[in-house]
Length: 113
Length: 114
Image (cartoon, rainbow over all chains, first blue to last red):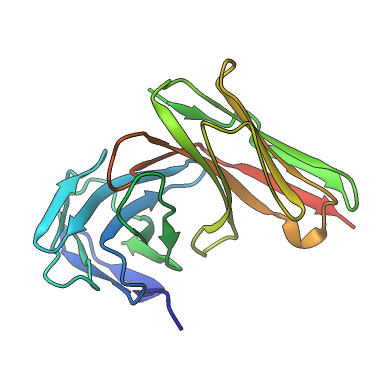
């Protein structure tokens, strides 16, 4: 089955610790994205990548880092510099090209204690 | 600066009736619009999209209308079913990009009562 997987579903971390969220896709999509959702708000773009070993900052990149060593994988690290890390994190992927549709994974709920 | 706005936080509809979800945008460079449905603690599911060269797109019970002059789009669900109860997000992308960077609205919670 083709799709996007994110793990774990729920993650708890102590304040001051870095944490890495996993995102894998087997849709053969070139582009991948990370979004954050907070209660009552829409999705906000953190980072995106069009190609292996290349990525760009989105609207709220501060306190986050990413890597894209493989086409299928786009892990997100939430660093201790992120002031409000508790949120629901969503990974998406799409084909390259204009007017393409993004498909989302199930999300990871991160709670920082 | 909220470029995509869903001004109704919630909508309640009776089963079998029409649900109309609205979305306004300010960036005239947007040329592709999408609607997603989202259940709590799950990822959004793509529903339907529309290009700016069209004013209507239909897929089963879902129809999206685009009014470019008013910078307004709407999603019609007919007939509404209890399983349609979810949060609905509209999203838009700017033409000419090769990766479809999306800007999302805040979402509208739809509740369909049996």
